[in-house]
Length: 291
Length: 338
Image (tube, rainbow over all chains, first blue to last red; front, side, top):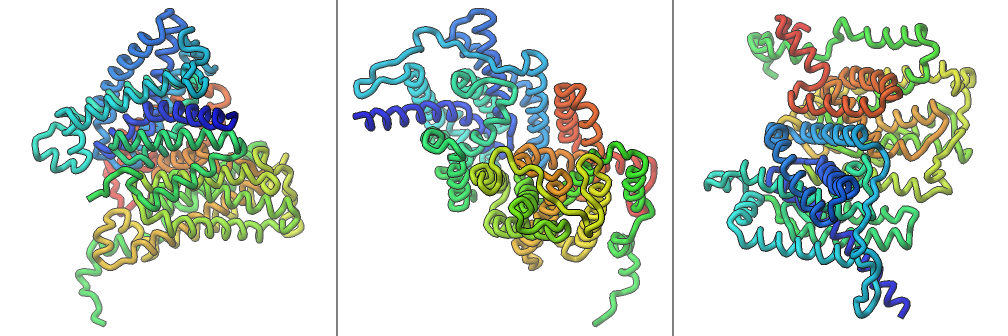
Protein backbone atom coordinates (compact mmCIF):
# COMPACT_ATOMS: atom_id res chain seq x y z
CA UNK A 1 0.00 0.00 0.00
CA UNK A 2 2.98 2.26 0.62
CA UNK A 3 3.69 2.29 -3.10
CA UNK A 4 0.06 3.15 -3.86
CA UNK A 5 0.00 6.13 -1.50
CA UNK A 6 3.32 7.27 -2.88
CA UNK A 7 2.05 7.31 -6.44
CA UNK A 8 -1.18 9.02 -5.42
CA UNK A 9 0.76 11.62 -3.46
CA UNK A 10 3.08 12.29 -6.37
CA UNK A 11 0.27 12.63 -8.86
CA UNK A 12 -1.66 14.93 -6.53
CA UNK A 13 1.38 17.11 -5.88
CA UNK A 14 2.15 17.32 -9.59
CA UNK A 15 -1.44 18.08 -10.50
CA UNK A 16 -1.59 20.85 -7.89
CA UNK A 17 1.57 22.41 -9.30
CA UNK A 18 0.15 21.98 -12.78
CA UNK A 19 -3.00 23.83 -11.78
CA UNK A 20 -0.95 26.85 -10.72
CA UNK A 21 0.99 26.68 -14.00
CA UNK A 22 -2.32 26.59 -15.84
CA UNK A 23 -3.85 29.53 -13.97
CA UNK A 24 -0.78 31.66 -14.66
CA UNK A 25 -0.21 30.61 -18.28
CA UNK A 26 -3.71 30.50 -19.72
CA UNK A 27 -3.87 34.27 -20.19
CA UNK A 28 -0.52 34.19 -21.99
CA UNK A 29 -1.82 31.55 -24.38
CA UNK A 30 -4.95 33.52 -25.23
CA UNK A 31 -3.15 36.83 -25.77
CA UNK A 32 -0.43 35.18 -27.88
CA UNK A 33 -3.08 33.36 -29.87
CA UNK A 34 -5.15 36.48 -30.45
CA UNK A 35 -2.48 38.96 -31.41
CA UNK A 36 0.61 36.87 -31.94
CA UNK A 37 2.19 39.08 -29.32
CA UNK A 38 5.27 37.59 -27.65
CA UNK A 39 4.58 38.75 -24.10
CA UNK A 40 7.58 37.73 -22.00
CA UNK A 41 6.35 40.03 -19.21
CA UNK A 42 3.36 37.85 -18.41
CA UNK A 43 5.12 36.31 -15.40
CA UNK A 44 5.66 39.86 -14.18
CA UNK A 45 1.92 40.32 -13.78
CA UNK A 46 1.81 37.07 -11.81
CA UNK A 47 4.56 38.39 -9.54
CA UNK A 48 2.87 41.78 -9.05
CA UNK A 49 -0.38 39.98 -8.24
CA UNK A 50 1.41 37.80 -5.73
CA UNK A 51 2.86 40.89 -4.05
CA UNK A 52 -0.53 42.60 -3.88
CA UNK A 53 -2.12 39.48 -2.40
CA UNK A 54 0.62 38.70 0.13
CA UNK A 55 1.03 42.39 0.97
CA UNK A 56 -2.68 42.81 1.60
CA UNK A 57 -2.71 39.77 3.87
CA UNK A 58 0.43 40.54 5.85
CA UNK A 59 0.14 44.32 5.87
CA UNK A 60 -3.55 44.97 6.24
CA UNK A 61 -4.66 41.70 7.74
CA UNK A 62 -7.10 40.92 4.93
CA UNK A 63 -8.26 37.30 4.65
CA UNK A 64 -6.90 34.99 1.96
CA UNK A 65 -9.92 34.89 -0.32
CA UNK A 66 -10.69 38.66 -0.36
CA UNK A 67 -6.98 39.26 -0.88
CA UNK A 68 -7.04 36.99 -3.95
CA UNK A 69 -10.00 38.95 -5.32
CA UNK A 70 -8.20 42.20 -4.63
CA UNK A 71 -5.09 40.94 -6.46
CA UNK A 72 -7.16 39.86 -9.45
CA UNK A 73 -8.98 43.20 -9.73
CA UNK A 74 -5.91 45.38 -9.15
CA UNK A 75 -3.74 43.62 -11.70
CA UNK A 76 -6.54 43.32 -14.27
CA UNK A 77 -7.15 47.07 -13.98
CA UNK A 78 -3.43 47.90 -14.10
CA UNK A 79 -2.91 45.70 -17.14
CA UNK A 80 -5.60 47.59 -19.07
CA UNK A 81 -3.52 50.73 -18.59
CA UNK A 82 -0.37 48.91 -19.74
CA UNK A 83 -2.18 47.41 -22.70
CA UNK A 84 -3.76 50.63 -23.97
CA UNK A 85 -0.73 52.84 -23.40
CA UNK A 86 2.15 50.55 -24.37
CA UNK A 87 1.30 47.12 -25.77
CA UNK A 88 -1.19 48.49 -28.30
CA UNK A 89 1.60 50.39 -30.06
CA UNK A 90 3.52 47.21 -30.77
CA UNK A 91 0.90 44.85 -32.20
CA UNK A 92 2.16 45.35 -35.71
CA UNK A 93 5.82 45.64 -34.71
CA UNK A 94 8.43 42.96 -35.40
CA UNK A 95 8.71 40.09 -32.94
CA UNK A 96 12.11 41.31 -31.93
CA UNK A 97 10.71 44.65 -30.78
CA UNK A 98 8.03 42.84 -28.81
CA UNK A 99 10.64 40.65 -27.12
CA UNK A 100 12.76 43.68 -26.34
CA UNK A 101 9.85 45.67 -24.99
CA UNK A 102 8.55 42.92 -22.73
CA UNK A 103 12.04 42.08 -21.44
CA UNK A 104 12.46 45.77 -20.60
CA UNK A 105 9.10 45.71 -18.84
CA UNK A 106 10.20 42.69 -16.78
CA UNK A 107 13.37 44.54 -15.74
CA UNK A 108 11.30 47.56 -14.70
CA UNK A 109 8.94 45.37 -12.68
CA UNK A 110 11.79 43.54 -10.97
CA UNK A 111 13.63 46.75 -10.13
CA UNK A 112 10.50 48.51 -8.87
CA UNK A 113 9.54 45.62 -6.60
CA UNK A 114 13.11 45.41 -5.29
CA UNK A 115 13.11 49.15 -4.55
CA UNK A 116 9.65 49.26 -3.00
CA UNK A 117 9.48 45.98 -1.07
CA UNK A 118 13.01 44.60 -0.99
CA UNK A 119 14.80 41.63 -2.53
CA UNK A 120 13.79 39.00 0.05
CA UNK A 121 11.24 36.23 -0.38
CA UNK A 122 7.69 37.10 0.73
CA UNK A 123 6.10 34.55 3.01
CA UNK A 124 2.50 33.59 2.31
CA UNK A 125 0.80 32.54 5.58
CA UNK A 126 -2.09 30.24 4.76
CA UNK A 127 -5.26 30.56 6.85
CA UNK A 128 -5.54 27.73 9.43
CA UNK A 129 -8.42 26.20 7.50
CA UNK A 130 -6.15 25.38 4.56
CA UNK A 131 -3.27 23.97 6.56
CA UNK A 132 -2.83 20.36 7.57
CA UNK A 133 -4.02 17.19 5.90
CA UNK A 134 -7.31 16.02 4.55
CA UNK A 135 -8.62 12.47 4.29
CA UNK A 136 -9.46 11.66 0.68
CA UNK A 137 -10.59 8.10 1.36
CA UNK A 138 -7.66 6.43 -0.39
CA UNK A 139 -4.92 8.62 1.01
CA UNK A 140 -4.21 11.60 3.23
CA UNK A 141 -2.97 14.67 1.49
CA UNK A 142 -2.19 18.34 2.10
CA UNK A 143 -5.43 20.30 2.23
CA UNK A 144 -3.98 23.21 0.30
CA UNK A 145 -2.99 21.06 -2.68
CA UNK A 146 -6.45 19.56 -2.82
CA UNK A 147 -7.98 23.05 -2.67
CA UNK A 148 -5.65 24.17 -5.49
CA UNK A 149 -6.81 21.27 -7.65
CA UNK A 150 -10.45 22.14 -6.99
CA UNK A 151 -9.87 25.81 -7.80
CA UNK A 152 -7.99 24.88 -11.00
CA UNK A 153 -10.82 22.61 -12.15
CA UNK A 154 -13.39 25.30 -11.37
CA UNK A 155 -11.41 27.82 -13.43
CA UNK A 156 -10.92 25.54 -16.40
CA UNK A 157 -14.61 24.62 -16.45
CA UNK A 158 -15.57 28.28 -16.15
CA UNK A 159 -13.17 29.29 -18.93
CA UNK A 160 -14.29 26.45 -21.14
CA UNK A 161 -17.91 27.54 -20.75
CA UNK A 162 -16.94 31.16 -21.40
CA UNK A 163 -14.99 30.27 -24.55
CA UNK A 164 -17.39 27.68 -25.96
CA UNK A 165 -20.77 29.01 -24.89
CA UNK A 166 -20.65 32.81 -24.84
CA UNK A 167 -20.65 35.36 -27.60
CA UNK A 168 -17.31 36.86 -26.61
CA UNK A 169 -15.84 33.36 -26.43
CA UNK A 170 -16.96 32.66 -29.97
CA UNK A 171 -15.36 35.92 -31.04
CA UNK A 172 -12.09 34.92 -29.36
CA UNK A 173 -12.11 31.54 -31.09
CA UNK A 174 -12.80 33.16 -34.44
CA UNK A 175 -10.01 35.69 -34.00
CA UNK A 176 -7.45 33.06 -32.96
CA UNK A 177 -8.28 31.00 -36.05
CA UNK A 178 -8.28 33.83 -38.56
CA UNK A 179 -7.84 37.35 -37.38
CA UNK A 180 -8.34 39.12 -40.70
CA UNK A 181 -11.55 37.29 -41.42
CA UNK A 182 -12.84 38.02 -37.92
CA UNK A 183 -12.04 41.69 -38.34
CA UNK A 184 -13.83 41.91 -41.65
CA UNK A 185 -16.88 40.32 -40.05
CA UNK A 186 -17.00 43.33 -37.75
CA UNK A 187 -15.52 41.83 -34.59
CA UNK A 188 -13.77 44.55 -32.62
CA UNK A 189 -10.46 42.75 -32.20
CA UNK A 190 -8.83 45.58 -30.26
CA UNK A 191 -11.51 45.57 -27.59
CA UNK A 192 -11.50 41.79 -27.50
CA UNK A 193 -7.81 41.86 -26.89
CA UNK A 194 -8.05 44.43 -24.11
CA UNK A 195 -10.68 42.34 -22.34
CA UNK A 196 -8.82 39.06 -22.64
CA UNK A 197 -5.50 40.70 -21.77
CA UNK A 198 -6.98 42.14 -18.59
CA UNK A 199 -8.67 38.88 -17.68
CA UNK A 200 -5.53 36.86 -18.44
CA UNK A 201 -3.35 39.16 -16.36
CA UNK A 202 -5.87 38.96 -13.52
CA UNK A 203 -5.73 35.19 -13.65
CA UNK A 204 -1.92 35.35 -13.67
CA UNK A 205 -2.11 37.50 -10.53
CA UNK A 206 -4.37 34.90 -8.96
CA UNK A 207 -1.88 32.20 -9.90
CA UNK A 208 0.98 34.24 -8.45
CA UNK A 209 -0.86 34.44 -5.14
CA UNK A 210 -2.07 30.84 -5.11
CA UNK A 211 1.34 29.49 -6.06
CA UNK A 212 3.38 31.73 -3.75
CA UNK A 213 3.28 29.01 -1.11
CA UNK A 214 5.50 26.60 -3.05
CA UNK A 215 6.90 28.63 -5.97
CA UNK A 216 8.07 31.36 -3.62
CA UNK A 217 7.65 35.05 -4.29
CA UNK A 218 10.66 37.27 -4.85
CA UNK A 219 11.63 39.88 -7.45
CA UNK A 220 13.31 37.29 -9.70
CA UNK A 221 10.03 35.36 -10.09
CA UNK A 222 9.19 36.51 -13.66
CA UNK A 223 12.56 35.38 -15.03
CA UNK A 224 12.82 32.23 -12.91
CA UNK A 225 9.59 30.73 -14.22
CA UNK A 226 9.50 32.37 -17.66
CA UNK A 227 10.70 29.22 -19.40
CA UNK A 228 8.09 27.06 -17.64
CA UNK A 229 5.22 29.35 -18.64
CA UNK A 230 6.44 29.50 -22.23
CA UNK A 231 6.83 25.74 -22.44
CA UNK A 232 3.29 25.21 -21.18
CA UNK A 233 1.90 27.62 -23.76
CA UNK A 234 3.98 26.22 -26.61
CA UNK A 235 3.08 22.62 -25.76
CA UNK A 236 -0.59 23.40 -25.24
CA UNK A 237 -1.01 25.41 -28.39
CA UNK A 238 -1.71 29.10 -28.77
CA UNK A 239 -5.15 30.30 -27.79
CA UNK A 240 -6.35 26.86 -26.63
CA UNK A 241 -7.69 26.91 -23.08
CA UNK A 242 -8.10 23.15 -22.77
CA UNK A 243 -4.77 22.57 -24.52
CA UNK A 244 -2.98 24.74 -21.98
CA UNK A 245 -4.81 22.89 -19.21
CA UNK A 246 -3.59 19.46 -20.32
CA UNK A 247 -0.11 20.77 -21.07
CA UNK A 248 0.14 22.37 -17.61
CA UNK A 249 -0.94 19.13 -15.93
CA UNK A 250 1.51 17.12 -18.03
CA UNK A 251 4.43 19.45 -17.33
CA UNK A 252 3.44 19.82 -13.66
CA UNK A 253 3.35 16.06 -13.01
CA UNK A 254 6.47 15.41 -15.11
CA UNK A 255 8.40 18.11 -13.27
CA UNK A 256 7.24 16.91 -9.85
CA UNK A 257 8.16 13.28 -10.52
CA UNK A 258 11.51 14.11 -12.13
CA UNK A 259 12.48 16.50 -9.30
CA UNK A 260 11.77 13.71 -6.83
CA UNK A 261 13.66 10.91 -8.56
CA UNK A 262 16.31 12.88 -10.44
CA UNK A 263 17.01 16.07 -8.52
CA UNK A 264 20.21 16.40 -10.56
CA UNK A 265 18.98 17.68 -13.90
CA UNK A 266 15.65 15.93 -14.33
CA UNK A 267 14.48 19.05 -16.15
CA UNK A 268 16.69 17.87 -19.02
CA UNK A 269 13.87 15.55 -20.04
CA UNK A 270 11.29 18.34 -20.02
CA UNK A 271 13.40 20.37 -22.45
CA UNK A 272 14.06 17.34 -24.64
CA UNK A 273 10.36 16.46 -24.58
CA UNK A 274 9.41 20.02 -25.56
CA UNK A 275 11.90 20.11 -28.44
CA UNK A 276 10.73 16.79 -29.85
CA UNK A 277 7.09 17.73 -29.46
CA UNK A 278 7.50 21.10 -31.15
CA UNK A 279 9.40 19.52 -34.03
CA UNK A 280 6.62 16.99 -34.46
CA UNK A 281 3.80 19.50 -34.00
CA UNK A 282 5.03 23.12 -34.24
CA UNK A 283 1.54 24.36 -33.37
CA UNK A 284 1.57 22.48 -30.04
CA UNK A 285 -0.26 19.37 -28.91
CA UNK A 286 -3.72 20.86 -29.16
CA UNK A 287 -3.21 23.78 -31.51
CA UNK A 288 -4.72 23.87 -34.96
CA UNK A 289 -2.48 24.10 -38.00
CA UNK A 290 -2.01 27.65 -39.21
CA UNK A 291 -3.73 28.22 -42.52
CA UNK B 1 27.08 38.03 -72.52
CA UNK B 2 25.59 41.41 -73.21
CA UNK B 3 27.18 44.10 -71.06
CA UNK B 4 24.61 46.04 -69.03
CA UNK B 5 23.49 49.31 -70.52
CA UNK B 6 25.77 52.11 -69.29
CA UNK B 7 22.79 54.12 -68.05
CA UNK B 8 21.86 51.25 -65.74
CA UNK B 9 25.38 50.83 -64.38
CA UNK B 10 25.58 54.51 -63.45
CA UNK B 11 22.23 54.48 -61.72
CA UNK B 12 22.71 55.75 -58.11
CA UNK B 13 21.32 52.51 -56.68
CA UNK B 14 23.76 50.44 -58.75
CA UNK B 15 26.65 52.64 -57.63
CA UNK B 16 25.62 52.37 -54.00
CA UNK B 17 25.39 48.57 -54.27
CA UNK B 18 28.74 48.31 -56.06
CA UNK B 19 30.49 50.51 -53.51
CA UNK B 20 28.94 49.30 -50.31
CA UNK B 21 31.74 46.89 -49.44
CA UNK B 22 34.46 49.55 -49.76
CA UNK B 23 36.37 50.57 -46.68
CA UNK B 24 34.99 53.79 -45.18
CA UNK B 25 37.38 56.42 -43.82
CA UNK B 26 36.13 56.01 -40.27
CA UNK B 27 36.44 52.24 -40.17
CA UNK B 28 39.98 52.05 -38.73
CA UNK B 29 38.95 54.32 -35.84
CA UNK B 30 37.41 51.64 -33.57
CA UNK B 31 40.50 49.47 -33.96
CA UNK B 32 42.82 52.39 -33.23
CA UNK B 33 40.76 53.13 -30.14
CA UNK B 34 40.99 49.50 -29.03
CA UNK B 35 44.78 49.62 -29.38
CA UNK B 36 44.94 52.98 -27.61
CA UNK B 37 42.95 51.48 -24.74
CA UNK B 38 45.77 48.95 -24.27
CA UNK B 39 48.33 51.68 -23.66
CA UNK B 40 46.08 54.18 -21.89
CA UNK B 41 44.38 51.93 -19.31
CA UNK B 42 46.76 49.13 -18.34
CA UNK B 43 44.74 48.63 -15.14
CA UNK B 44 41.47 48.01 -16.98
CA UNK B 45 42.70 45.36 -19.39
CA UNK B 46 40.61 42.65 -17.72
CA UNK B 47 37.50 44.69 -18.32
CA UNK B 48 38.67 45.50 -21.84
CA UNK B 49 39.16 41.81 -22.63
CA UNK B 50 35.64 41.03 -21.43
CA UNK B 51 34.33 43.88 -23.57
CA UNK B 52 36.05 42.65 -26.72
CA UNK B 53 34.73 39.12 -26.19
CA UNK B 54 31.22 40.48 -25.69
CA UNK B 55 31.55 42.49 -28.90
CA UNK B 56 32.61 39.36 -30.78
CA UNK B 57 29.68 37.41 -29.36
CA UNK B 58 27.29 40.22 -30.32
CA UNK B 59 28.84 40.26 -33.80
CA UNK B 60 28.07 36.55 -34.21
CA UNK B 61 24.48 37.18 -33.20
CA UNK B 62 24.30 40.07 -35.65
CA UNK B 63 25.05 37.64 -38.45
CA UNK B 64 22.11 35.39 -37.54
CA UNK B 65 19.64 37.90 -36.14
CA UNK B 66 20.59 41.15 -37.79
CA UNK B 67 21.33 39.90 -41.29
CA UNK B 68 19.36 36.67 -41.69
CA UNK B 69 16.56 37.66 -39.33
CA UNK B 70 16.70 34.40 -37.33
CA UNK B 71 15.17 35.31 -33.99
CA UNK B 72 16.92 33.22 -31.38
CA UNK B 73 16.79 33.30 -27.60
CA UNK B 74 19.45 30.62 -27.27
CA UNK B 75 22.62 31.97 -28.81
CA UNK B 76 24.57 31.36 -25.59
CA UNK B 77 24.35 27.64 -26.46
CA UNK B 78 27.19 28.18 -28.96
CA UNK B 79 29.18 30.46 -26.69
CA UNK B 80 29.00 27.78 -24.02
CA UNK B 81 29.81 24.97 -26.46
CA UNK B 82 33.00 26.80 -27.44
CA UNK B 83 33.94 27.64 -23.86
CA UNK B 84 33.38 24.07 -22.65
CA UNK B 85 35.37 22.67 -25.59
CA UNK B 86 38.42 24.72 -24.62
CA UNK B 87 37.90 24.08 -20.91
CA UNK B 88 37.39 20.34 -21.12
CA UNK B 89 40.18 19.72 -23.64
CA UNK B 90 42.66 21.59 -21.46
CA UNK B 91 41.46 20.42 -18.05
CA UNK B 92 41.55 16.74 -18.95
CA UNK B 93 45.01 17.14 -20.44
CA UNK B 94 44.01 16.31 -24.02
CA UNK B 95 44.97 19.47 -25.83
CA UNK B 96 45.64 23.01 -24.70
CA UNK B 97 47.61 24.89 -27.34
CA UNK B 98 45.63 28.19 -27.48
CA UNK B 99 45.12 28.80 -31.19
CA UNK B 100 44.31 25.25 -32.21
CA UNK B 101 41.95 24.79 -29.25
CA UNK B 102 40.22 27.98 -30.35
CA UNK B 103 39.69 26.45 -33.77
CA UNK B 104 38.35 23.33 -32.06
CA UNK B 105 35.96 25.54 -30.09
CA UNK B 106 34.68 27.15 -33.27
CA UNK B 107 34.34 23.75 -34.96
CA UNK B 108 32.39 22.23 -32.06
CA UNK B 109 30.04 25.18 -31.92
CA UNK B 110 29.60 24.97 -35.69
CA UNK B 111 28.66 21.30 -35.40
CA UNK B 112 26.10 22.16 -32.69
CA UNK B 113 24.82 24.99 -34.86
CA UNK B 114 24.57 22.80 -37.95
CA UNK B 115 22.84 19.98 -36.07
CA UNK B 116 20.33 22.20 -34.33
CA UNK B 117 19.93 24.50 -37.33
CA UNK B 118 19.00 21.64 -39.64
CA UNK B 119 16.02 20.74 -37.49
CA UNK B 120 15.12 24.05 -35.82
CA UNK B 121 15.15 26.32 -38.85
CA UNK B 122 12.12 24.60 -40.35
CA UNK B 123 10.07 26.53 -37.83
CA UNK B 124 9.63 30.23 -37.30
CA UNK B 125 8.21 32.80 -34.93
CA UNK B 126 7.31 31.70 -31.44
CA UNK B 127 8.10 28.04 -32.12
CA UNK B 128 11.63 28.91 -33.24
CA UNK B 129 12.05 31.17 -30.19
CA UNK B 130 11.00 28.32 -27.90
CA UNK B 131 13.10 25.72 -29.67
CA UNK B 132 16.29 27.78 -29.48
CA UNK B 133 15.58 28.54 -25.83
CA UNK B 134 14.96 24.86 -25.05
CA UNK B 135 18.09 23.73 -26.93
CA UNK B 136 20.19 26.09 -24.85
CA UNK B 137 18.54 24.99 -21.62
CA UNK B 138 19.07 21.38 -22.65
CA UNK B 139 22.81 21.97 -23.08
CA UNK B 140 22.92 23.82 -19.77
CA UNK B 141 21.25 20.92 -17.96
CA UNK B 142 23.54 18.45 -19.70
CA UNK B 143 26.59 20.45 -18.56
CA UNK B 144 25.11 20.52 -15.07
CA UNK B 145 24.52 16.76 -15.03
CA UNK B 146 27.82 15.56 -16.50
CA UNK B 147 29.87 16.87 -13.57
CA UNK B 148 32.58 14.25 -14.05
CA UNK B 149 33.53 15.92 -17.32
CA UNK B 150 32.18 19.44 -17.02
CA UNK B 151 32.54 20.10 -13.31
CA UNK B 152 28.77 20.42 -12.97
CA UNK B 153 27.46 23.45 -11.14
CA UNK B 154 30.93 24.64 -10.07
CA UNK B 155 32.39 24.45 -13.55
CA UNK B 156 36.08 23.92 -14.29
CA UNK B 157 38.52 26.31 -12.68
CA UNK B 158 42.26 26.95 -13.14
CA UNK B 159 42.20 25.54 -16.65
CA UNK B 160 45.84 25.25 -17.74
CA UNK B 161 46.51 27.44 -20.79
CA UNK B 162 50.13 27.38 -21.99
CA UNK B 163 51.85 30.54 -23.22
CA UNK B 164 50.90 31.77 -26.69
CA UNK B 165 53.53 30.65 -29.26
CA UNK B 166 55.41 29.39 -26.20
CA UNK B 167 56.39 33.00 -25.42
CA UNK B 168 53.54 35.12 -24.09
CA UNK B 169 52.10 34.02 -20.78
CA UNK B 170 48.38 34.27 -19.96
CA UNK B 171 48.47 36.00 -16.61
CA UNK B 172 44.99 36.24 -15.09
CA UNK B 173 46.01 39.09 -12.80
CA UNK B 174 47.67 41.18 -15.47
CA UNK B 175 45.89 40.26 -18.73
CA UNK B 176 48.11 42.03 -21.26
CA UNK B 177 48.49 38.98 -23.49
CA UNK B 178 44.81 38.15 -23.27
CA UNK B 179 43.80 41.63 -24.41
CA UNK B 180 45.92 41.63 -27.55
CA UNK B 181 45.15 37.98 -28.27
CA UNK B 182 41.39 38.60 -28.01
CA UNK B 183 41.70 41.77 -30.07
CA UNK B 184 43.46 39.82 -32.82
CA UNK B 185 40.76 37.14 -32.67
CA UNK B 186 38.02 39.76 -32.86
CA UNK B 187 39.72 41.45 -35.81
CA UNK B 188 40.06 38.24 -37.82
CA UNK B 189 36.46 37.23 -37.13
CA UNK B 190 35.29 40.73 -38.00
CA UNK B 191 37.10 40.69 -41.35
CA UNK B 192 35.47 37.32 -42.06
CA UNK B 193 31.97 38.51 -41.11
CA UNK B 194 32.41 41.75 -43.05
CA UNK B 195 33.41 39.90 -46.19
CA UNK B 196 30.51 37.53 -45.71
CA UNK B 197 27.78 40.14 -45.33
CA UNK B 198 28.92 42.13 -48.37
CA UNK B 199 29.19 39.01 -50.53
CA UNK B 200 26.32 37.82 -52.71
CA UNK B 201 25.66 35.26 -49.97
CA UNK B 202 25.21 38.04 -47.40
CA UNK B 203 23.03 39.90 -49.84
CA UNK B 204 20.73 36.91 -50.14
CA UNK B 205 20.52 36.68 -46.33
CA UNK B 206 19.24 40.25 -46.20
CA UNK B 207 16.77 39.31 -48.89
CA UNK B 208 15.49 36.39 -46.81
CA UNK B 209 15.12 38.66 -43.80
CA UNK B 210 13.18 41.24 -45.74
CA UNK B 211 10.93 38.96 -47.76
CA UNK B 212 11.24 35.20 -47.42
CA UNK B 213 8.43 34.47 -49.84
CA UNK B 214 10.00 36.50 -52.62
CA UNK B 215 13.38 34.84 -52.10
CA UNK B 216 11.67 31.47 -52.50
CA UNK B 217 10.05 32.80 -55.64
CA UNK B 218 13.32 33.95 -57.22
CA UNK B 219 14.75 30.50 -56.60
CA UNK B 220 17.10 31.14 -53.69
CA UNK B 221 17.74 28.02 -51.58
CA UNK B 222 16.32 29.70 -48.46
CA UNK B 223 16.67 26.83 -45.97
CA UNK B 224 20.23 26.00 -47.01
CA UNK B 225 21.25 29.67 -46.79
CA UNK B 226 19.72 30.01 -43.33
CA UNK B 227 21.37 26.84 -42.03
CA UNK B 228 24.75 27.92 -43.43
CA UNK B 229 24.42 31.34 -41.86
CA UNK B 230 23.34 29.83 -38.53
CA UNK B 231 26.31 27.46 -38.58
CA UNK B 232 28.80 30.24 -39.34
CA UNK B 233 27.27 32.42 -36.68
CA UNK B 234 27.53 29.53 -34.22
CA UNK B 235 31.21 29.07 -35.11
CA UNK B 236 31.98 32.73 -34.39
CA UNK B 237 30.04 32.52 -31.13
CA UNK B 238 32.01 29.39 -30.26
CA UNK B 239 35.28 31.24 -30.86
CA UNK B 240 34.04 34.00 -28.56
CA UNK B 241 33.27 31.37 -25.93
CA UNK B 242 36.67 29.75 -26.39
CA UNK B 243 38.38 33.13 -25.98
CA UNK B 244 36.35 33.70 -22.82
CA UNK B 245 37.47 30.37 -21.36
CA UNK B 246 41.13 31.04 -22.23
CA UNK B 247 41.14 34.62 -20.97
CA UNK B 248 39.53 33.70 -17.64
CA UNK B 249 41.05 30.22 -17.30
CA UNK B 250 37.71 28.86 -16.12
CA UNK B 251 34.37 27.71 -17.50
CA UNK B 252 31.05 27.55 -15.71
CA UNK B 253 27.33 27.25 -16.33
CA UNK B 254 26.87 31.01 -16.81
CA UNK B 255 28.33 30.59 -20.31
CA UNK B 256 25.19 28.66 -21.27
CA UNK B 257 22.57 30.61 -19.34
CA UNK B 258 19.53 32.59 -20.40
CA UNK B 259 21.16 35.63 -18.78
CA UNK B 260 23.99 35.63 -21.27
CA UNK B 261 21.68 34.99 -24.21
CA UNK B 262 19.34 37.81 -23.23
CA UNK B 263 22.19 40.22 -22.50
CA UNK B 264 23.75 39.73 -25.91
CA UNK B 265 20.43 40.42 -27.63
CA UNK B 266 20.06 43.59 -25.58
CA UNK B 267 23.61 44.66 -26.46
CA UNK B 268 23.09 44.08 -30.15
CA UNK B 269 19.80 45.93 -30.25
CA UNK B 270 21.16 48.72 -28.11
CA UNK B 271 23.93 49.25 -30.66
CA UNK B 272 21.76 48.61 -33.70
CA UNK B 273 21.43 45.28 -35.50
CA UNK B 274 22.19 44.43 -39.10
CA UNK B 275 24.99 46.99 -39.36
CA UNK B 276 28.26 45.31 -38.26
CA UNK B 277 29.47 48.06 -35.93
CA UNK B 278 26.28 47.94 -33.86
CA UNK B 279 27.81 45.06 -31.91
CA UNK B 280 30.78 47.25 -30.93
CA UNK B 281 28.76 50.32 -30.02
CA UNK B 282 26.29 48.24 -28.02
CA UNK B 283 29.02 46.35 -26.18
CA UNK B 284 30.86 49.54 -25.24
CA UNK B 285 27.68 51.30 -24.12
CA UNK B 286 26.28 48.36 -22.18
CA UNK B 287 29.50 47.10 -20.61
CA UNK B 288 30.68 50.59 -19.78
CA UNK B 289 27.44 51.53 -18.07
CA UNK B 290 27.01 48.22 -16.29
CA UNK B 291 30.64 48.17 -15.14
CA UNK B 292 30.36 51.48 -13.37
CA UNK B 293 26.66 51.73 -12.52
CA UNK B 294 25.75 48.15 -11.74
CA UNK B 295 28.22 47.91 -8.89
CA UNK B 296 27.13 51.18 -7.33
CA UNK B 297 23.37 50.99 -7.82
CA UNK B 298 22.40 47.53 -9.12
CA UNK B 299 18.65 48.12 -8.83
CA UNK B 300 18.70 51.55 -10.42
CA UNK B 301 20.80 50.10 -13.23
CA UNK B 302 18.19 47.44 -13.91
CA UNK B 303 15.40 50.03 -13.80
CA UNK B 304 17.27 52.31 -16.20
CA UNK B 305 18.07 49.42 -18.54
CA UNK B 306 14.42 48.40 -18.57
CA UNK B 307 13.27 51.93 -19.37
CA UNK B 308 15.88 52.17 -22.13
CA UNK B 309 14.74 48.89 -23.70
CA UNK B 310 11.09 49.94 -23.61
CA UNK B 311 12.01 53.29 -25.15
CA UNK B 312 14.04 51.67 -27.95
CA UNK B 313 11.27 49.17 -28.70
CA UNK B 314 8.60 51.88 -28.79
CA UNK B 315 10.58 54.37 -30.85
CA UNK B 316 11.83 51.62 -33.22
CA UNK B 317 14.96 53.60 -34.00
CA UNK B 318 17.27 50.60 -34.33
CA UNK B 319 19.63 51.35 -31.47
CA UNK B 320 22.28 53.97 -30.92
CA UNK B 321 23.63 53.74 -34.47
CA UNK B 322 20.11 54.05 -35.87
CA UNK B 323 19.43 57.16 -33.81
CA UNK B 324 22.78 58.61 -34.89
CA UNK B 325 22.01 57.90 -38.51
CA UNK B 326 18.63 59.58 -38.42
CA UNK B 327 20.22 62.60 -36.71
CA UNK B 328 22.84 62.75 -39.46
CA UNK B 329 20.14 62.59 -42.08
CA UNK B 330 18.28 65.43 -40.45
CA UNK B 331 21.38 67.58 -40.80
CA UNK B 332 21.48 66.89 -44.49
CA UNK B 333 24.09 64.18 -44.76
CA UNK B 334 22.76 61.41 -46.95
CA UNK B 335 23.40 57.79 -46.14
CA UNK B 336 25.03 56.99 -49.46
CA UNK B 337 27.76 59.52 -48.77
CA UNK B 338 28.38 58.81 -45.07
